[in-house]
Length: 108
Length: 127
Image 1 (cartoon, rainbow over the protein chains, first blue to last red):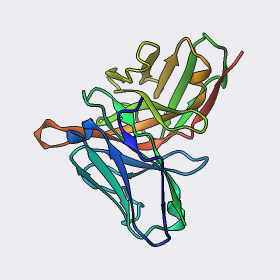
Image 2: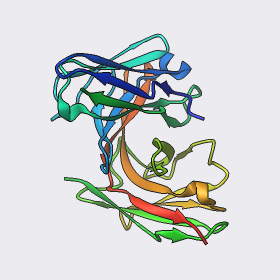
Image 3: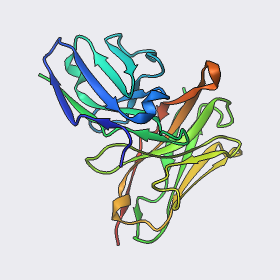
Image 4: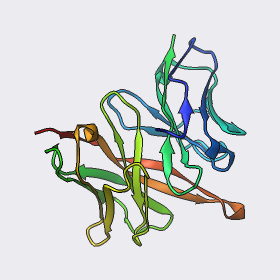
């Protein structure tokens, strides 16, 4: 079972803001990274570290952490943001990596 | 631009060993700060991190599969490989190879992110 828990699904109106959360004890000590996966495609890195976006990722994606919860916020959601989102971090022992359970984002 | 390509049998019989190889194109597997690993995704399900390896041979495994998984690296061929033994239908999945970047932070903390993914290869376990 995953040590990082995400809500299975969230929906957001076009142009509105959505926050995707990832909960786990390891997040008190380790950063989360966030990946976007669209159907039939490999995941794409969207945010890593404190709040770093790779080149090409729009600035409407941002990351944050508070306590045992990491969040990915999409400010001004676009239709192309509809996808599955996964968090990833070290486990509590720090010895391996683990993915969150994933969140399906629907843009209405 | 660095690319990864998975290769290996698409069909494996139950109880046998699944073997996959990932070839690195456009860069060296011996680059510092990069680890090389495997992630899988069963049909219709989420991502599962399996293992990664540094070019020196240092390995990290998911505890849920550690007893069945071996990851190895061949720097002369710019490849790394995954072996998963005693497979069952539950091991049927899309297997991705991926480059992990290690970021070292002040105070000796670090984290990893995956910046390059292969396209994935589907492996089916069936008799």
